[in-house]
Length: 157
Picture 1 (tube, rainbow, N blue to C red):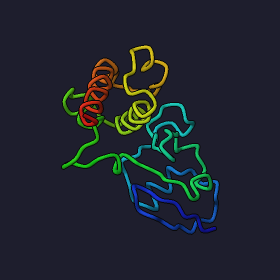
Picture 2 (cartoon, helix red, strand yellow):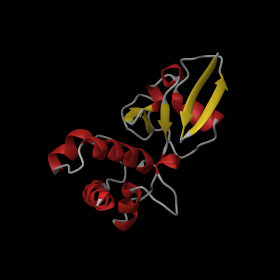
Picture 3 (cartoon, rainbow, N blue to C red):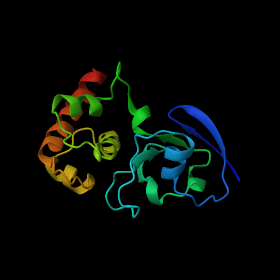
């Protein structure tokens, strides 16, 4: 089956035998974008979070057939070294990562949250950012989320 979608603002067309293949494996193994991580395979930990039409999804349980004709954004498409996304900049400023494995998923979940709620409270963060970090950098992430909200507002002014 041929499936067409856009990833990080680039159109792609892939031929795949099983349209129920998780989008995670298409992104990592076929498109060779390694920033999106495999964590649990059950949509519980959030390491595989990316955006489909600006909505955060757990790509380990999201069949590639559902990405047809949609816009997919991975951590590689969020920003770059020269022009980091406010979330990426905040993560750098607050020195969030410890091991760093789960951080792309957290950043993608945060970017989606800030798109819906540009000034989240701690309670909003607790309700919406439910990814899991084995290193427990939650305190630094909360600071970074608030900083990313500030940077986002500053970039609009």
